Length: 281
Image (cartoon, rainbow, N blue to C red; front, side, top):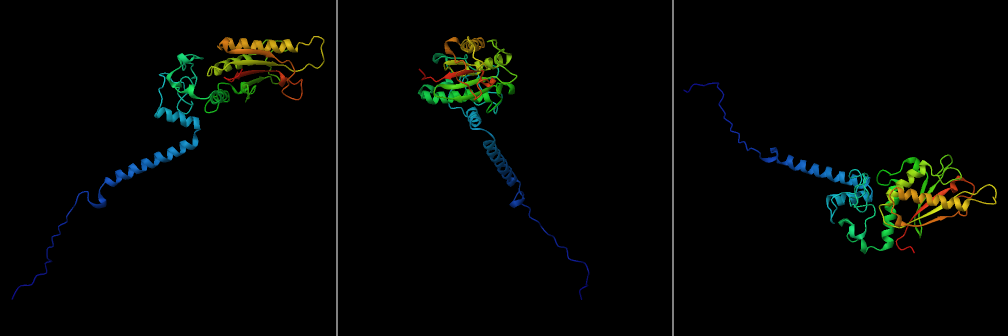
């Protein structure tokens, strides 16, 4: 008769381990990280498209994928978002070193202007005037004018060209009373307009206007004074770097074309600097 025992049987369990198998591996983490990175880049792209202007987007696109030859010296602003593009003949940089010179002729233009001759003169004028207007008003970056100086300027486009109107304000005249001696305000504005107008090669005309006098004088100075102030503006522009052969005419209009209904208002003391269209007679 066999002896009975209370000892439990010994069970040996053999576990088969497959390294990296199934969902316990790490390869899926790499793929997921790539997916998250791509989604982050996509949403950042969407944000940039919404937060920038058309000109800024064009500048970025040209920077990363240029399609035409680029001059070795950039003509853009400060940083990718500060300037509009980097083609030296279209933009004057902040440090003044971007273009070959302020008024390059066709023989000395950089490679960045290839194909400009094929654009119609009206379209070219429109683009150039918009560049000047944007520079004056600070669109797409910092303005070249101070806040105080911008209060004296309005611009408008006519059949004649882009009119930059510089007008006096109460307590801030452009000339000393009754003379053609310019104040510091006009000197600063004239210097900046000369620099900005160097972005284009259009001819320039200057009109002088003054306010009416309260009484009719036997020898009214309005004609001589308005002409003298227009001519003084011409000398300020030339002294600031504007080439003399771009200046087409200087005219005094006396008090015959007031800007506001009150003919004796200081607002009528103004100078018009006109960038003429290329097809203007």
